[in-house]
Image (tube, rainbow, N blue to C red; front, side, top):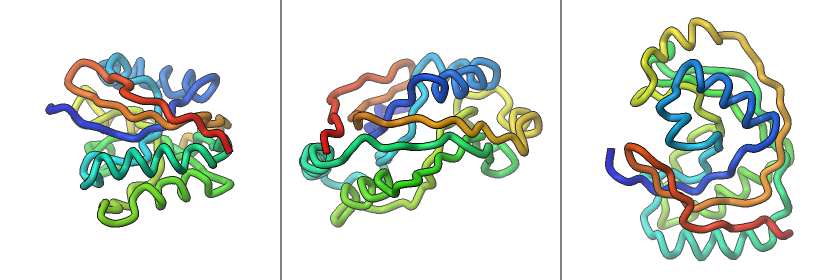
Length: 167
């Protein structure tokens, strides 16, 4: 895996504990690489990195902390494409942040907000994970207080910059 840059929001408290407990069982490799998080912008969506980061700096400064809820567990391709907990954005602030960051020339991939439980590249058996977790709903609230600019490779995730929500 080559280095991949993302904009994410970190999960903490009970939300991180719930995701990490599942990742300890179903994807300990990814759990060791990257803490529980929600990706806001993926590498495939970024065309102009300096513009993305300038927008992030500007928008984070006027965005209030974002209440979220880690919810229903879902999967892609019966688990073979990964197992995820969907993330509810009741105020729409995370969606608004994403929309602002991905204005042209960036590309908007329309990924649903989620926290990964079993990643298809690192989990031993994401399909078995899906069989075990199908129908579960974590229903755990969390508040995002900052966005992170990160780089991830095969063994580590590094936070390159933090953008506190100050609105």
